[in-house]
Image (cartoon, rainbow, N blue to C red; front, side, top):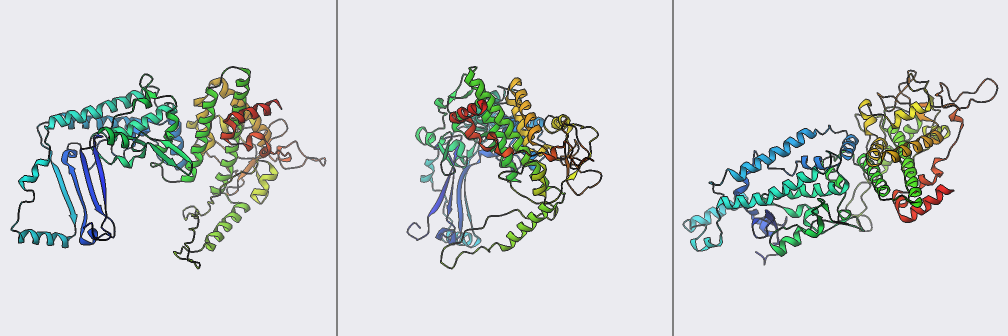
Length: 570
C-alpha cells in the first residue's frame, strides 16, 4: 500500500534487555492513512516472556512505581515538594518493602521457570468489517496455512534457562549498583551528584528485564536533551551505543567506579534530580516551582561555599554568600506572607479589588478562534487561575517583587488600616517571634506552616552548611528581621496566619517598641502629642539592599563574588 497516498506508517521498537536485534515491534498506520481507513488499527510482534514477571498487569518496578526514585532523592526536596502540593507523607519503610518485593518477584521469575516455554506473539488489531473480509478470503482459499514451513526458519530458539541467565546477568548488577549508591550516605542525604546517579540507575533497572520503549526515557536514550531555547543537558546515550554495539553497554568514561559516582564534570550535564518528582506531584505547579527555585538556589550557594578555601578572599566570599542567602530567605518570607494572605480566608480591600480585576480580565478574554480577520491564527490567551467554588475567598496573585513589611507598605497593599494584634501569651518580644518564624521544629508546627518555601529553604541550608556557617546565616537573618520586618502578620504554632480574638475575618499585624517588646497597639500616639517608639512609625527600604536586587546566578559567579566583597567593604 506504499503507492497509496497517505499510507505511511509509524514503527515503534521495544528493545529487550538493552539489545538491538531482539525485542518487540509495533506498526501503526497514521490517523488518516489508507491502512486505518481499511480497518487495520495496528500490528504488533512481541515475546510472551513478560508473563513470568506479570502480576495482575503490574510489572516489576512498574513505570508508575516511583519508590526507587523516592529512596534516592534528598529528603529535604521530597518533603518540600510534598508539602507544596499537600500530598500525603511518603512512607520510606513501604518504599523499601516495595523495592524488595519486586526484587523477590524478579528472582522467582528467572530461577523457577526454566522448564517452561515462552513463544512469540503476532497480533493484528482490526475492525470487525476487515476481520470478516479476511475470514472470507481465507475460506475462499480453503483455509491455507498461515505460516508455511519454508518461512519458519527465520526464528531462533534458545533454551529458557539460557535466556533467564542472560536476563539475570543484565538486571542484578544494576540492582546491586543502585543499592550501593544508596548506601553511600544515610537515608535521604545523598549528595546532588549521587542523587542524579540513583535516578539514572532507577530507569536502567526498570527497563532491563524485558521489552522496553527506551526512547520514551530521554535521560537514558538520548545523548543530548534540549531544555528550553538555549540550555542542553546530557543523557546516557543508549541509542547510539545499542545501534553501534548491539547491546547497551555503559560508557566507562562517564563514571568513577572507585568513588561510585559520575566522573569529574559529568554530573553537571545531567538534569537536576528533583524532576523525577514532578510527574508525581502534578497539582499546584506554580507552588511547586517556587519551592524548587529556592531549594535549588540554596544548593547552588551552599555548593559554592563548600569549595571555597581559607584565604582572606575566600572568607570574604563565604561571608557575602551567607549574607545573600540570609536576604534570600527573608525575601521569600515576604513573598510567602503576601501570597498566603491573598489565598487565605481573610478579607481586606486590596484582596477584593484584585478579585474584581481578575474577574474582569476573565470576562474580557477573547474566545479562541482558528481563523482571525487577517487570515492568521490568533494567539491562545494565557490560562489564569479561576476562583474556586470551594474557596470563594481565595485569590491567586503572583508577586515579582513582594511589598515591604512596613506599616506604610502594608497599609497600601491592604487598602485599609492594618488591624493590630495584642501581645501574645508566649511570644512577647522580637526574638521570640523570630525564633518561632525561622527556628521552630517542623514537628511542632501545624496548619499552614509546612508548606512555606522559606522554611524548607532554611531547612535545606541547615543540612548543607557547616554549623559555624549556619549560625552566621541565622545571625544575619536576625539582623535583617530586626531592621526590615517592622509590621508582620500574627502567627502561632497552630496557625501560620493567626487572627485575634477581636476579629476572625481580618489579618492581624504585630509591631514592636524600641526595646523589641511586642506592643498591644503599635499604631497609637502617646498622651503628649508624640508617638510611641513603635516599628510601625519607622520606614525601611529592603528592596534597595544590594543582596535583595541580585539573582543567585549573579551572586555566585566570579564577578558577582568580587562585587560582593566590595559590598562588604563598603
